[in-house]
Every structure is written in C-alpha cells, then in structure tokens.
Length: 178
Image (cartoon, rainbow, N blue to C red):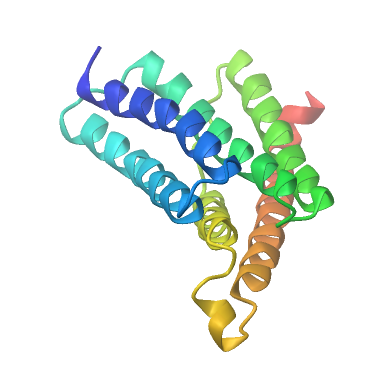
C-alpha cells in the first residue's frame, strides 16, 4: 500500500475516534473532536497531493478517498444531530445530495465516463467542513460575541450543497436519459 492510500486509511481510522470523543462527556471533548476532525479533513488534501506529486494514483485510492470523505462528513453530521446542534432535515438534504451524486457517478462509470469533481463540489465540501467544526465547537468563540457563525455556516453549506447537486444533475442530464 502506498503512502497516499495509508493517509486515506488514517483519515478513516480517525472517524470513530473523533465520534466517540465527540459523543462522550469528557472534559474538552468538543475541542479534541474538532481538532481530530480538522486533522482528518486536512489529510484529504494531503493524500491527493501525495498521490499526484509522487504518481501514486491507484484504483484503491480513487475508490477510497471519496468514500472516506463521505463517511467522515456523514458521521460528524449524524453525531451533531444526536447532540442537538443541527436539525435532522438539514442533514437529510445534505446526505441525499451525496447519495444522488454518488449514484450518478456510478451510472457514468458503468458507461465508461469519469466525472471529475467540480469547483462547486470543492466549495461545498469546504463549507460543510467549516460548518461541522463550528458546530462541534458549539459556536465558540463566536458565541461570546453573540454572533451566529455556526448557523450562517451551516445554511451556506446547505445552499452550496443543493446548488452544486442541481448543477451536477444538469451536467449529467445526458447520462441520466440514456
């Protein structure tokens, strides 16, 4: 297994660790889980860089990288529902978009078509990660100045999730209709 794939697997291993810490009542659990989630998020950039820079792009990496991203983000959002920090309908919309896009990519792949991630998808992911970290920290430090950063971040992430999903569906219209 190459270095890029090991980094991806490390991100996967971090998921249950930050979830357990997040859902436990340990002192500074919010901060620790947010740090671990942030580290996991940064490894996503790192594994892609290593794979491209050192020519370590593999079929395993192509499969695992987006899957681990979805596991990481989905797990965090679901845990945040349990903590009462996000409404379930928002998470349902976000996860529905991920399932739809994954389904479209699978259909395209079966037809020999590779659909690269768009900039909208990258913005969506960035906004989701920022929102998750903010929600994990329970809007601290912004709560001290009564600024609803978490709420703004999650609604921006929700908007970009829906917008990028619709854009994706429109771009895949021909694939869907064949």
